[in-house]
Structure formats: structure tokens, C-alpha cells
Length: 438
Image (cartoon, one colour):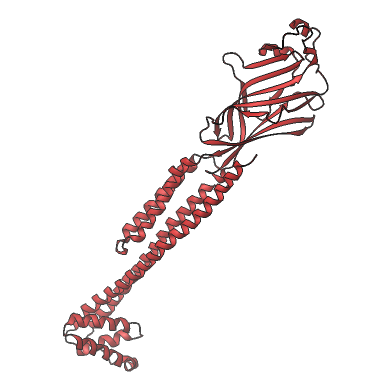
């Protein structure tokens, strides 16, 4: 019967003009999505079905419904040569023989089926990484015949099927598949194309645990510095610098696993903001340390100034400003003398007068001259004045620094929480909108 079918059969002549070819495909497994090569590999079956009345055999054997052949019989028949035109690599499985099925129905319908491994291109949208989505495509086309000879179309609305919803590519989950037909124009004419689009969404649970959780911990640790006493500024600086270095090291590990791209990714934004918050905590400490340094330098200048005035062998007559401040200083002196006979107490009270007097031009000369002229315990009072003045400035500095820490401890978490609400709402919404595509 085969000899009768092939008698006077020419494989170079098409059955009709044009030949209607229907295509269907079943995706068996998706093995890998490779971000470095922008591709995915998959195993699939695809079939090309057409009608060739020259191969109808019902007149020879009415009881036989179909005939099945292997790939060796294909070379004797006319074929539309439907192939995948956008793949980087494709091969027919051999296990051990080529996985090709050619079936002839008794009415002359030809069903040609292949099981192939393909590597096809994908569009990785890394701007949303790790909440990114991937769009891959498979394009079927009659490579040898244009629309004048072959018209290809999908077999039915369910021409693209999946053998299973769970695939080997565990880093991604399948979101949708879509197939359509369009016309491609070449210099040699028009060709019909059948395209399958496969959408994936990255499973970002790994990155939540391994990247984002560590970033959160580093930022939270940097806020602990606000609770450490201002007297331990070196410890605060070491804590913040260590968290900043840890963050930068982790950032390098993340970008090392991704291809270099010319745009900023979602995780880059998050990393930059975390670095900014830690750096801002360092700036807050630098501001406090700067104020502390100014306080120390001012206290040293006060100490040296008062000491030099006490060491003068004589005090010249007061200038015209002495008349202006004299009564104020006398009242301060009488107050601290009247309260206690102790030079320490007088030094503490005089420190207030000195501290207030130093705010006025020429005030320190007036104050010290009064002490030298009427106090026989000037050296001891000098020591007490210097000590109490430094202590008072230190207390003021600590109070102001503590207030800055309190404000920072509230504002930093509030600002970081606001950023997180905006960040996660935006990127998760984009991810789920892609998953809803049909």
C-alpha cells in the first residue's frame, strides 16, 4: 500500500495552493531561565497538520484508520517545513532514536510531530529586580514557503498547552501564556508567523530572607547608636561605620550575580536608601562630635584666658565699660560671698557670673579684676571657676546632644517606614499586574 501511495508522488509539488497548515504545541518542561544569556530552555512537542489528498488510502484499505512512521519516511513526503525561527539552539530529542512521529490518516491528513529541546530568547525586565518579570517567546514559521504556498494557523484556541504547572526552573513561576498570529514581511514576500508568549515572575522569597532582611538589620543597628551615651562617641562611630561597610559588601555580592545593565534596578534603589540612612546617622554623630569639639576648645580658651588674667601682677584701671557692668558684678560677688564662706561654693557661683560676663565685651577683665582686688583666695577660686564653667558647658552640650538623639530616634524610623510603604506598594503592584495579563 505504501508503494501505491508513493507511485507518481512528487515531494517537490505542494498538495494545493495554498496549503492550510495548522500548528499546536505542548510545553513539557521549562528547565532554566538564564539571566546572563537572556534565554530560557524548554522541552516541547509541536505538531504541523495539513491535508494531502494524494496520500489518502481509504480506497486501498477501508478498515485502517491511520498509518504511523518514523523520521525516515518524512523525506519522501512534501512538508511545509514549519520550524522555530527565533531559537538560539534547537535539536530533536534522540532517546535513542529521533523523537519524530509522522502519522497518515485515511483521508490524506498528515500529522508531523517533533519532541525538541529549544533555547529561545527572553526579555528580562531587571529594572524591577527582584520583583521582576520575564517575557519569553517561541515563533513558528514555514521556513521554505511564503503565504502564496502555505498558510499556517493555530489548530484551535487551545493550541498551546502545558503538561504541568510546576517546572524545573524553581526561581520563577509561570504567570501566563498567550499565542497569536501575525504577518511578517521579507524581501522575498509575506510569511505568516505564529508566536507563543510565556510570562514568568521571579520568586523573590529568597531575596527577602538573604538580602532585604540583612539590609533591614543593618539599618536598625545603625539606629542603636542613638541610644548610646554621647560620652561614648567612638563606640557610636565604630557601630555605624561597620554597618555601612557590611551594607556595601553585601551590595557588591548582589550585583555580581547579575549582568551589567545601563539602568537602575529596584534593589539598587532600596540599597541606596539604606546606605543614605546609615550615612545620615553618621552625619548626625559628626554634628554632635563637632559641637563637642567646639565646647572643648571654648572651655580651653576660657581656662587659658582666666589663668592669664589671674597671673597678671597688676590690673590697670577699669575702662569706661567698668562703670556699665560694675554694679552687676558687685551684686554677683556679694551674692556668692553671702551664701557661704567656702571658696568652692564661691567658685561655683562666680562661674555663673563669669559665664554671663563673658558674653559681654570686656566682661572677663572686669570680673577677674574684682576678684583679684578683693578676694584673698584668688588661686583657689580660679580653679573652682574653671572647673565649674567646663562642667556647666558639658552639661549643656549633653542635654542638647541628647535632644538631637531623641528627635533622630523618632524621625529616622518614620522616614524609613514611609519609604518602605511606597517602595513595596509600587513594585508589588507592578508584579501582580503583569501576572494578570492574558
